[in-house]
Length: 78
Image (cartoon, rainbow, N blue to C red; front, side):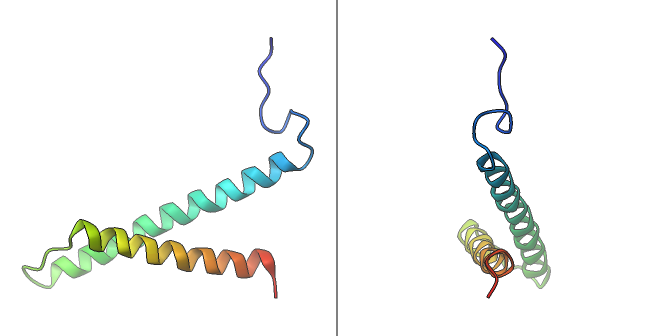
């Protein structure tokens, strides 16, 4: 039996929509990780301050929320 990909099944346009949403989520996660890492580098460079795991997760979450607002504005329109 041949395996089917998302686009080859009987999903019509749903497969394309799922792939686009997945790509947006993946891009937002990567972007948030980069922003949080740069923030950590800047924070720890100023002295003997430590950027905790909780601060890292909060920074990532805030960045993800901002990415979600921007993508919602772009994809949803006014």
